[in-house]
Image (tube, rainbow over all chains, first blue to last red; front, top):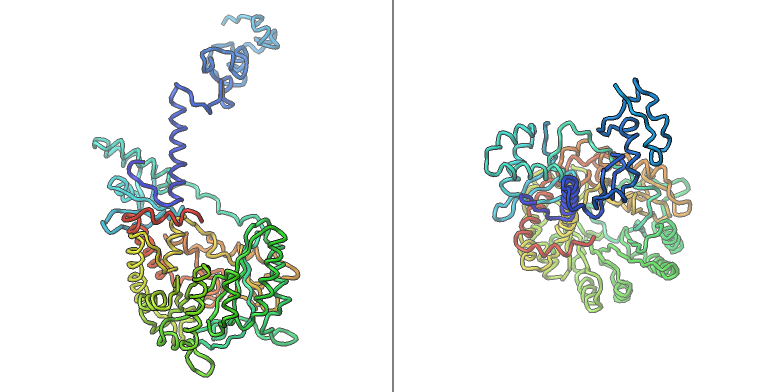
Length: 111
Length: 480
């Protein structure tokens, strides 16, 4: 901190806390290099998470990328265009029980 | 969003550099022009943060202003006005393990100091109990049982303290000796350590007693008010004869023997009354001439209409006196030397640690007092006040009563203290004094707020002055 000097023990503890928070906030906005304590792949809050892992591939993502498909219309708000399964095409994904194996069986939908 | 500075106190060192004490956290910081400007803008009524920063967006230091503002919010110096206050801190998990037990080994005293709360008009003990008067002396058996009680109720603490108090403690050396012996036995069996301390008026010190106290590394506090004039003004025998001439040779022998054995520092405890000599003169006499390592001063505790009571003007003189002695302390600290003004030493330690108290002292929490008959009280000052009894050494602590008291005496219940910057250090002040003055031990001592604030101010200023000249001095306070 440039304009405040922490003097007693309590102030130094608070300062360390503030600096730590700043470091974390910076880490969130800095894409590279990822900090070592950052989870590989996705986070619990934003499933399905990253589209590539930190090495640039998909091997280390914490769930198969194919599952992103369901998260795009079902449980999440992943911004990919899929059929509207809520009102117009409720049966769109019925043919696909396990997307990792049979995602190719999903029907096409024409508006 | 509107932001506002929390309760704080500003102070300065000798060069006028600005410092800040934050009452919500007890943190101390040095400010500069930028942080001072921000603090000034957001104190009292507060201000809208975005517009305040936007108005200064053309300035060269606009980015730094914004960054520093964020730092001050993070450090809890400035907070959003509409912020929901954090939940009140709760009592620590109860039953809280005892660390210190104060044994009131006797109610008797061979002196009859006019201001004594034990014997004077401010004594709060109840009248004689059913079946006769209270025992004047603690029996060696009760002393040993008290020690056993402490070892039983101290959880996993590795170190315990036993303090002997009176009356005049040395009138009952048998109980002290028995308690010390039992404590050392138990400590040895359980792999713990124990230390002893005692307060005495020094009239009964003999070579044999001195040898015992030094050998057991007692922390010794001698009640003495200064030179012959100050000592004999109030500290007299029942005949009216002064005690100075009796105690001085005994004190000298004690200090000499203790020093040769490398014992713990021996302190003097001075009660300041109306008409006392200047604090600096008393200190110089007790430290310089008699050789006490530390001297602590306590304004007399009393109702306000006694002839020895301190009244408003006296407190102004007292703070001026304390300021003089603090100047000497600061000079010594700047040279890297220690100074024996124990009040300031204690205050600086608390300030440096950033202690923020929920309760003014450990009474009822880690410390209890025991009466001559084995009844437990909040502290030694409350023994034999039935209202403040919290159990017995045989049956243990009345946990419900204890928790109830601590809840009521918690700083959050003292709403008047909410706006005071001295709150982390004072926390409402002495329970006994509150009881004497206000009839309720859980009340804040509103009658000495000005005094406590002035004293805290003096501590803060001394802290800054030492910090500016010799910050290494504070290394001695790094560990608690």
